[in-house]
Image 1 (tube, rainbow, N blue to C red):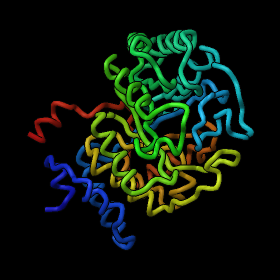
Image 2 (image 1 turned 60 degrees about the horizontal axis):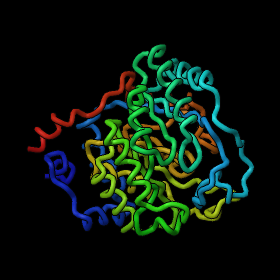
Image 3 (image 1 turned 90 degrees about the vertical axis):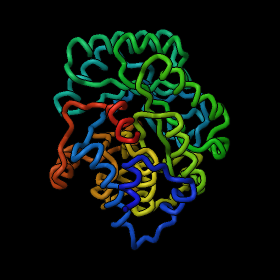
Image 4 (image 1 turned 180 degrees about the horizontal axis):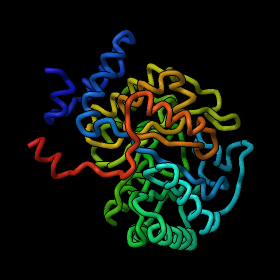
Length: 335
């Protein structure tokens, strides 16, 4: 019985087995991708979920995250602006729907949102829900309180993103202005409010294999419904500007690891996809079932038409009406 089949049947990999995936021979990469695809196909078929970011508030962030161009510690040339208007957010959602986007991600820089920030986003989301059918809304606003999360849920926010970014062990090497526990607390706040939790990682920041394995298991424990896997795109002027340790095959192994550890979850190839996977982006979609279309926060994505063509060439289908894996059905499968 293949390892993929045992995972589908409910088997949970050990950390030792997970590490073996990262250390597998490069010559075995196609076998590994195929095994991960068995799991992806079982839960998601040939569907690909499309996500779009609107950078609603850029730069001006007091945190010192070493990867981020928006930190006040970074010496970068990026657009810096306060929260955009409600109307701009709403118009972005309408354009997203026209382009078959499943989840519209409203992202803000900063440590935590002000109450005015939250109120503006709430107003925009309420309008979007009234005017745009079947479009999921994800908010990414930094550290939020449970009270703020409850208000966002009531407005119609479907999902909230707050990445753990790296392992608890490696966290202090990446940022010192907040703790790993602060990030976990925010995820728990949105879960308590009834919002679907989205949390992921950034790989390629000097972490070890053990750190990557710990990230995958941490997200399993947090029960994140959506897991964006970012690959560091080093930006000049940031602390990690000279970090460039990833290869396309290494990225595929990381994606496979997250699929094996979190088989039922949405795995999204996120920031750094084009820069790090390069010509192997197609293989990544045999593992992940979700991507961002268009640009990221401060780095460019590839032309959206290329993504649509990639999906078509692979024989995959855009998921026009995104759905979550039925947890009760999954529980029955694994019982």
